[in-house]
Amino acid sequence: MLAIAALCLMPFAAASIAYFYWQPQGGMNYGELIPARPLIDPPLRRLDQQAFRLSELKGKWILLQLDEAACPAACKAKLYNMRQVRLAQGREMQRVERVWLILDDAPLETQLMREYDGTRMLRASANALIGEFPPSGGGRDHIYLIDPLGNLMLRFPKDADPRRMHRDLARLLRASRIG
Image (cartoon, rainbow, N blue to C red; front, side):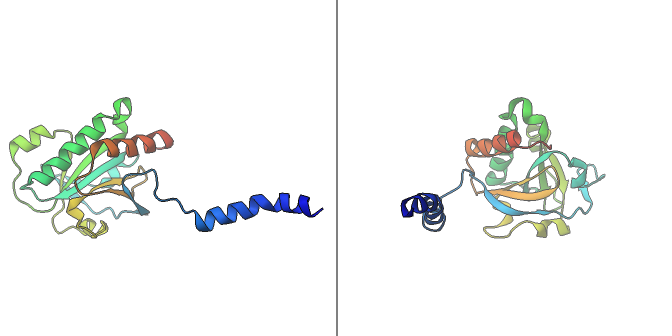
């Protein structure tokens, strides 16, 4: 009788030991998960001065970066990575949008606008939306991912590896029924 009781209790004991003492070392994701929370939706300005809100992109996954109009090398690398990660999604790339929140009112280089055509370049100087992005490590260092419901949910590291970004996004697109 004791043997049968021990046999029945063994899975629970093993599960408890695994839960408390064998914690997983890391997740499958490359980007840092942020507790999902909806972003505020203040009006932004497109380059032609027309009003735009991020809610207009609801239903799409959004790769977003924040940087100045001067766009140093790190900014250009993020723009390039966002473009390549979107293209790498193949037929699913229509589900992904790219957004660059420009943090000042300085003019943009025409060459830069042509090279990254398709990226939504939005002026956000002195906008409350900028405060929504986690400051640890500097908001400008990261590429963020916003889900189709408008929730900020993931942050890729500084100098992110585009292959690993692609894997994260492809996994999300495959698992998601929305967007």
